[in-house]
Image (cartoon, rainbow, N blue to C red; front, side):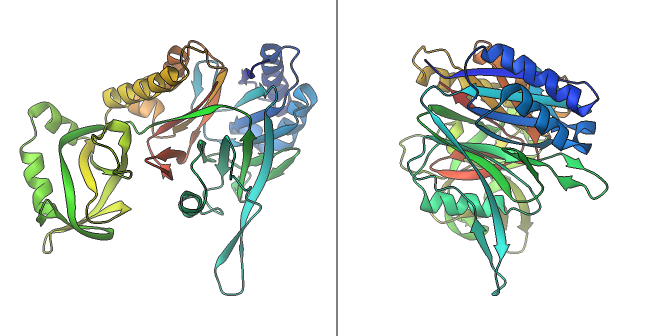
Amino acid sequence: MPVRVGTGLSTLAEPRAAALDAASAAAAELGTDRCDLVVLFASGGVLDAPELVLEAVHEILRPETLIGCGAGGVIGHGREIENGTAVSVWAASLDEGLATSFHAAVEEIESGTGALTGMADLTGADGAVLLSDPVTFPTAAVLKFLSESTPMLPLIGGLASGRRGAEEETVLFIDERVVSEGAVGVRLDGVEMLPAVSQGASPIGPELTITAGEGHVIGELAGKPALEKLRDTIEELPPEELRLVQGGLLVGIVVDSNKPDYLQGDFLVRGLVGADPETGQVAVAADVHPGQVVRLHARDAESADRDLREALSIRMTALGGRPPAGALVFACNGRGRSLFGRPDHDAEVVADALFGAPAAGFFAAGEIGPVGGGYFLHSFTATVAVFA
């Protein structure tokens, strides 16, 4: 029996009622199959009583494993609830696959440094989902460590974006517990999961090679001071690309240079964070080194729509005609209405591209996904885990 997925979405105001409603809908789609894994997202008023939400989901679905988080907004059933109260439940029967949950944290030691504890060994896994607290868990640093220490696998997730109480604690769900620090995740074995990362930006202008640079600073591009070369490049852009630059200039950095040509998804897109007119240096939000190829990028609604559709189309091609069982969606909280000018954009694109396969997710404060052989924390991105 293949992997099967069911989802449920509820906007009822009372925490237990909302959770029962969403979990029952997911159970109905799952049918008689056992529930091996639940991924749970909750937003708004229900976060005042997350224990009631968790208890109700367990009552209906009785999952072997459960992870989840509080959210600023949730996604499910082709809808996006960007504000207000909602519960979104994603439930899966994994056939012979295995889901193993973990709760990772960073503990301070006497030297003043931190030690990572509870993180699952992902060596040999077929996939993983990670949901982390943006305050107490150094997600970017952990992803860099995993990139250097763990063979590449599909790793997808996001930063929790919902809080509860006057102290605004983060809400993370792990099996039958609610925790407020660290990160929760699940290791997947015997499950085919395909990651899609849509950074929502279009490449513009020519490719440029870093000829001097270190750390976050680019000193030279193509033998010229970086700032001078960027100005020259912008001045030479055709009118239609110059228009895109008005919305903000980004830099795409090639992480994996072992390719004859670089396509849109080969660039790690980062913002320009500073420039020094005297030295001609520019700073970007990523580590760089001489020999890397960069290209200017710009973000707008049209390019974000196109990029997401293309990323999902590639995954559907990889499935070779097999219908997807379902998907998990992690969209930046800067997307939605504020980017596209209308509700439900990403949810509708996912539903259309995946032929209506059950999908659920949330609006994250940062999205986790692989690019060019490494794991990265993104912004303004939609990352999707497509389950075969």
